[in-house]
Image 1 (spheres, rainbow, N blue to C red):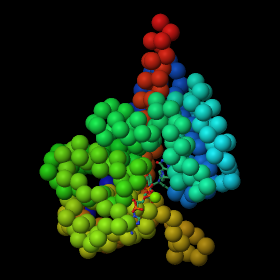
Image 2: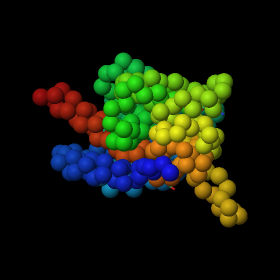
Image 3: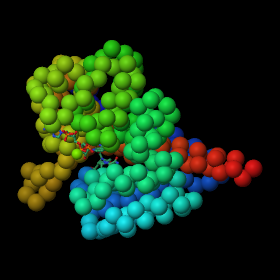
Length: 291
Ligand SMILES: NC(=O)C1=CN([C@@H]2O[C@H](COP(=O)(O)OP(=O)(O)OC[C@H]3O[C@@H](n4cnc5c(N)ncnc54)[C@H](OP(=O)(O)O)[C@@H]3O)[C@@H](O)[C@H]2O)C=CC1
Ligand SMILES: Nc1nc(=O)c2c([nH]1)NC[C@@H]1CN(c3ccc(C(=O)N[C@@H](CCC(=O)O)C(=O)O)cc3)C=[N+]21
Ligand SMILES: [Mg+2]
């Protein structure tokens, strides 16, 4: 049986460190979250986030907009948040409803406040190994891997998924750890065989239990990013499952993250870490400009 990583406990200790640092600041970091419509994974995220933001001593600004929100209205909100001195971090929940232009909305976010690391500026800094804001989920995954594996030099890492939010930035971070990285996606052939080469397997697909136990190399480390809401055994109820068939995978893997209680809590802790980083940079820059 694999060792099961407790992301909840790890995230709790990260948040305690963040709270201690926030308490020493002369200002209060503020984090704004924008949710358009009602994507199920986003709703899970928002529900858990607002409370934890306040618990570490930050201000939380929530903007819930209807699915029919126009591009112009959403752009105006992002611009208002860019200009708001109480807001140091801006997170626009993805995916946005189909009629909205995601690229243009992300491009409107000030890179200094881009706590999701989605702007071209922050993505480019990451790709070049320069300091910027790193996407929260990838950062959380790497912290878990560093804690469990230490040096990852030479390990084969397979990332299933190539989104700008998760798959691509995780691949960049694994490359920085000297892994040999393969990125798989919906057009990949023989996905099962490719997964089987992985010493580190990252599932960021959004397909419940796609990755089966017999796709996993015995002893591999499996990080399940997926958050999928599916019907539960009890009629009318739902439950969260990952992109990995956990009950099979846990028999084969060496180390594995569960869903819930794995990557999800780490994402929130890293979001708060990024908000703190952004706030400190913004406030220090302002101080310099004023002096
Ligand atoms: N735990 C957490 O903190 C977080 C969880 N999530 C969850 O992680 C999952 C992925 O999120 P995100 O990256 O934003 O999702 P996207 O939908 O943006 O990307 C999914 C990726 O998976 C690939 N894919 C889809 N189907 C298959 C398949 N059958 N075989 C192989 N690859 C496939 C897609 O390929 P292609 O590019 O070819 O379309 C795409 O690259 C979701 O469940 C999301 O809710 C997301 C963020 C944080
Ligand atoms: N711009 C953007 N950035 C994101 O990072 C982003 C996003 N959009 N859209 C939605 C997905 C999904 N996501 C989650 C984060 C934490 C939990 C989380 O806290 N999960 C708990 C759930 C516990 C429970 O409620 O049962 C867990 O896995 O243990 C879930 C989902 C971030 N996402
Ligand atoms: Mg997509």
